[in-house]
Amino acid sequence: MKQVISLSEIRRLFVMGDQQFEALKGVSFQIAEGEFVAIMGASGSGKSTCMNILGCLDRPTSGVYLLDGVDVGEMDSNQLADIRNCKLGFVFQGFNLLVRTAAVENVELPLVYAGVHAKERRQLAMAALEQVGLAGKEFNHSSQLSGGQQQRVAIARALVNNPAVILADEPTGNLDSATTVEIMNLFTELNRQGITIIMVTHEHDVAAYAGRQITFRDGRIILDTQVDRG
Image (tube, rainbow, N blue to C red):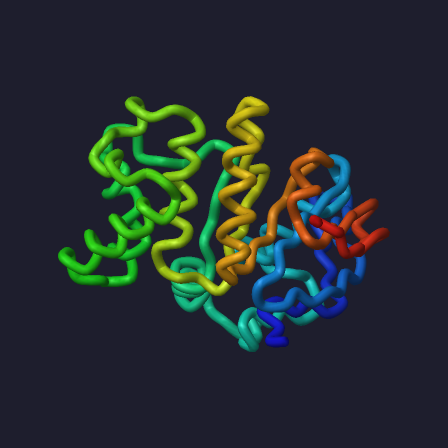
């Protein structure tokens, strides 16, 4: 099966004055196309640093990161921006939507940056909103949508460029229990359609939706287990 993500001996050293902190200490793992992976660990374990590197928001101090077979470490800042826009879809805890903007326009944003023509942008954004169950809500502003609906808009925005991987950072952190189940069922369905998902969470019941759990402690992976989702 095709490897979408390959990390080899990734280290990340932060230097603050005369203090040094090694957030990642030689982390290696591969993620195949179509996997649903939960990254877990306590605060300070290294999971967020790893997620930032996976999202091309930070660079490792050493080691090799291959995304879709391409060495990310060889890229300049403009190439990294292109990768973030075209190869990766991001879903955040706080939704990160433009408040006074219609749902469909929020979803179109990655396509604007990619230079897609207006008519095609609208068609793709409408289709993505339908895919996440928001047909009929395309022209509602964020303030007119529930938290769960706002997160669905964010997921549609992550999907619209047909990325190699969706990165979800605590995607249910701002949602109640019932809405959390709805959103996780949506992620599960998207994964069944073949979409690769990597999710950071500290909640075990949320991580249970993933087919694989990678657990960090003190900058290292201490567990990497396959999960029987029935």
